[in-house]
Amino acid sequence: MAGLRIEFCGEWFEVDAEQPFEIGRDGDLEVDDNPYLHRRFLVVTREHGMWWLSNVGTLLSATVCDESGGVQSWLSPGTRIPIVFPRTTVVFTAGPTTYELQAELDDAPYADVHTDALRGEGEGEATEATIGLVPFTTSQRQLIVALAEPLLRRGGTGLSELPSSVDAAKRLGWATTRFNRKLDNVCDKLDRIGVKGLRGGPASHAKNRRARLVEYAVASRLVTSDDLPLLDLDPADAPADGSGEDR
Image 1 (spheres, rainbow, N blue to C red):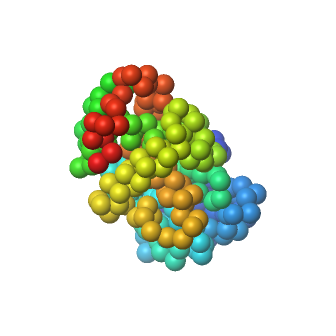
Image 2 (cartoon, rainbow, N blue to C red):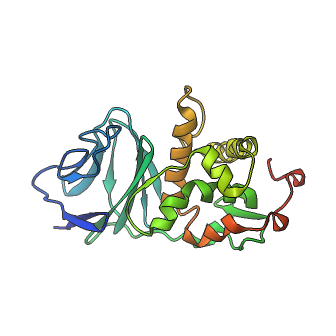
């Protein structure tokens, strides 16, 4: 029988196939004493020869993907997904904090797909990179990296604080209005290719879409720690706003 292990903050948990493995504020894996996190949020079970990850919460969702980020799902409340890859990454946000877990499965029925070619090439001087079929300008990539910086610098699973738009704008030396305009553009692009959770919603949506963008970007490897130098890119080397980069 294929064994399953889950890692969080450097600690490994062996999952027993005979009983549910609960993840949340309480449970077999106590993620954090965070009042925004469900006591029971995710549950891992083995049924009919397969491992399953279920969202048993009522408010929070999680981003689940294979190691390369080429296969990704949004696990909303009341849904479940089979765990079929050798390594599966789970990213979710509760309040101001984003969490990342990793599951390792022995004798996985599917292999990880590799999408390095889809990320596009290019360093800080490039004006545009293509992620899958979506073109991103340098400044749009800078925005994504600024929001994801705490997760990217952590270098492993665990937890990190989600920057506010004001703080991320300051990190880049931008006005908040410029940051928010570019955030709209990035979310629009990803929404058009079917990435959920980036458009629509009530007043709290501003925080939610930043969290969802970071979850998607980190889990899908849209940005990695290799992109951190973009944060220190000299403004003179980046395209000006008038170059059409906001389309």
